[in-house]
Length: 281
Image: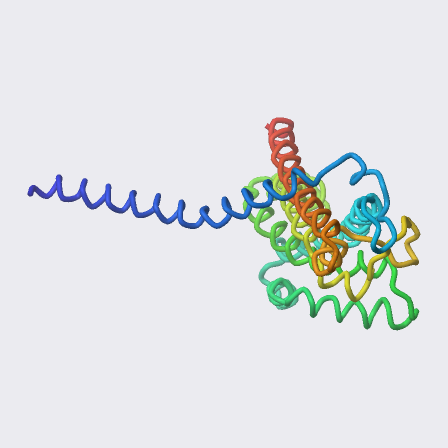
């Protein structure tokens, strides 16, 4: 076998191995999605989306309280985490040579690896024990703490990709370093940062453990931020471990709805990124 032919064979084998690895990695995901569609779509009804839970033991009801509660918790988490994460990431990228920036980067990496239940216990001690009350604010705080390192690291990486000529041009025109970072560098990296924010929102939408210690859950419809509030993940967990067959059916429907919410956030991230890229292009 000639040398060129041997190289083509090796290249084809390597490409085939890569393709097989991708299929092997996607196979469990495909099975999970298929089983979720099979069990969840059939249980999804209009009453499930617009009705509150029925009393224990009664058939029917829905997850309206949990759907609204999840949206409120995501909104609270984003309100808290987005400014902190973006500012932290911008600082680390612009002052990456300083010791404080290195400490912030290390803290973000460490926080990103902390188990979610530990974050829940931390939020419980900070936002629940002092006021002796579970609340939506405490749940949003816990989820926001989980979002911060994702947003910070994404912002840092995207800001570092902005060409140095953008900064030099702004500084040459008389802008301060902070003004150049806010008015020139940050807008240039905004499409990628927005994608990272939406990915972080999708990430926290499926969290359960932190909410068990903070928002706690609520079988009634409530939008009060200082009271316990329902969440899809908590209600799915409660229904899944119950002895009632109808609750099991609704748990599958809730799991399917949660996957749809994550998918919608991912699609919005893609569309927003493309639109912003065209605007900046």
